[in-house]
Figure 1 (cartoon, rainbow, N blue to C red):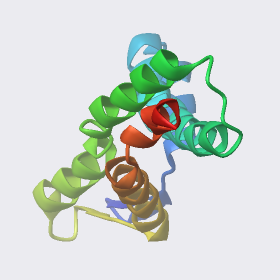
Figure 2 (cartoon, one colour):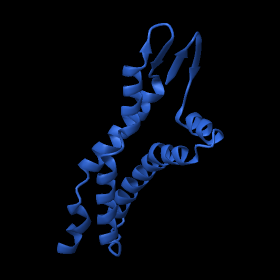
Figure 3 (cartoon, rainbow, N blue to C red):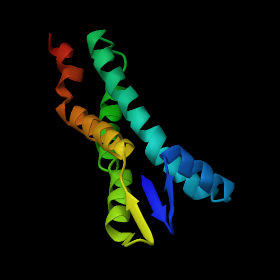
Length: 136
């Protein structure tokens, strides 16, 4: 997002915000933002890729584990939009004329697109495929 405050404009990224919080000794908040904004989306993508690959390769020894991973991905999907909501709330609330304003940038749109794509992918995945080959 791009922040305009008292005549100065500055651009912020998730990683940049994490580094700033870390330098200000806000380790807990920096860790939460890192996990929620970086780790969880990457892990969701990797889990969905692994689920699809394991179905393709017919890996039968991990049936319950795959089911748990699928449920975890669905549960985490509910919380994936928190970062997008935070930017939207900041943009809506912090518009103080020429003194302070916040605008979302292309990165916000790209991040929201990835979050929405992983949520749709998790919903589109059919968990019955994990167990279907046992009936053959």
